[in-house]
Image (cartoon, rainbow over all chains, first blue to last red; front, side, top):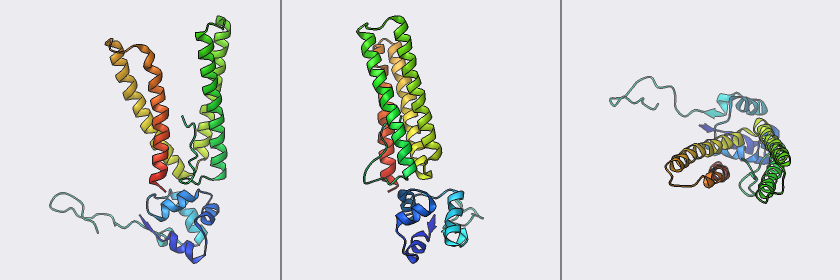
Length: 79
Length: 140
């Protein structure tokens, strides 16, 4: 899942450690979220949104909308 | 069991996680030490039957304390850390089940003696430790 966490953090001139301390998670978690290796839980996503005072949708982008049609091979098309 | 999960350079656990990890390590070390001492003393026949029971129960208490410390660590762990631990536990559990049952079949077939069962537990501990390190590298 794509996200704007790194940009939002940079805008405030925070380090990953600063953000981790504010969110009460490890710096490794912040780094993993920023690099897209780990998707945060819903409670953590809400904490992030509250911290930056914006909605979750303004931070996280699922990249793929819900599939509506199947292709000829029976797979859902990527929108 | 999580004997040592602090890996410098690839992990930055929260202070609470580090504290809980230390607790697990301390209890696990005490448990392992007690197990080794009791095993050694039993083999040397230093203990009466009553003392052997007391020593075994004492070791079991340390084991339960280790499990409770590990549970506390998992309940309060950072969510990524919890995910890494879950994956490591799944691998260790799988290796324990597959390795243990395979060894049991070979034991029943007379291929191996029963002395190697402790290696199954060793393999579980080692696989868990390796899986934690690999997991932390993957998410760093």
